[in-house]
Length: 422
Image 1 (cartoon, rainbow, N blue to C red):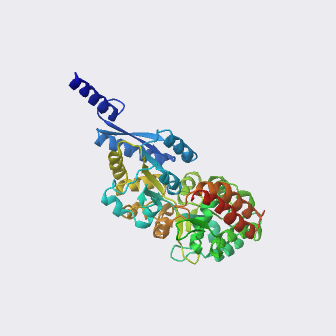
Image 2 (cartoon, helix red, strand yellow):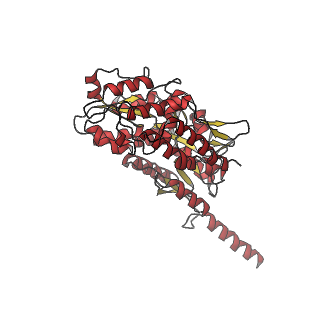
Image 3 (tube, one colour):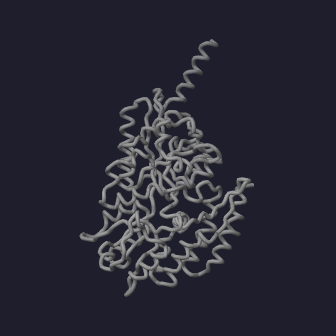
């Protein structure tokens, strides 16, 4: 009787470890945030290829959304229903990592994958000595320009080898403006990441970690160069319209195509929309963002893949990540999302070095992409939403001056961060 009871218990345990069908097959839930048609197609194709080659470990594709991923993940973590494999962005991971919701990948990932991605990229997902995500896609901010307008104006066209300085950029946008047309349109509905990441080119860092490990906000001279340039283009030079400050990147495209703006600063992946939506005969080109004291250095928050701490199948999930991020597969994901891969072997792929659609310009910037300033700052999402976003929006619109912006970012911001560092 006792032996029979033990056998029944073992069978129940095995059934619990198996997939939903109880056939001994492991099922991994993979929540993807791919949203462009090409990206979704590439990701689903790779999932199908994995499933065909690994009948004992089935991956179930789950569609997520960038718009709600933070709150959705937090709810699923606390409810014990998180997907095994999680697609997110590096600047969203710090609180999840410190909260114990993500698995430490340090000993789960194969050496080949670790060695292929540069150390500075791994720094975006390293918190407290643990590794909580694989950074796999990244995008610089670039200038998308009306090529014919620039050619007619006679301005010097920048290249990654000889970019505009921020001062020259301001001069160029003044020269391109007039008659109801603007040299640049800044879509700054989400102003914080754009400002902080571009400010690294001028030597700005904003967040400073003390010897006690705690982070404080200091808005110094280098942090002011990019915000002041944008503010002055809007309020002093009138070379940038005030009307686009509350817009998203896509909202500026009709005006760009219609000849109202000569340039729009956008993430590299916006090229996909431009290539699909531009009117017939509209000539556009990709230019590097302006350079400051630190050249073309720019902050990025790569897209990441993580494993939930509660997943019972971490080794299988890590094997799936290794498959998904093989160099050729990473290139497929990058092309599908119109972004750059982090892997050094993937970056050498000829498909990423063509002049068409500005691929070569973006790839030339890959070596200057570094972790975004807020990457490891606990409390950053709240600081961004409650303090920095309204402060930058008011400054760019002209409602407040630079001294008030500084005071709000530092005084109000440090009160928020202090609560996360007690």
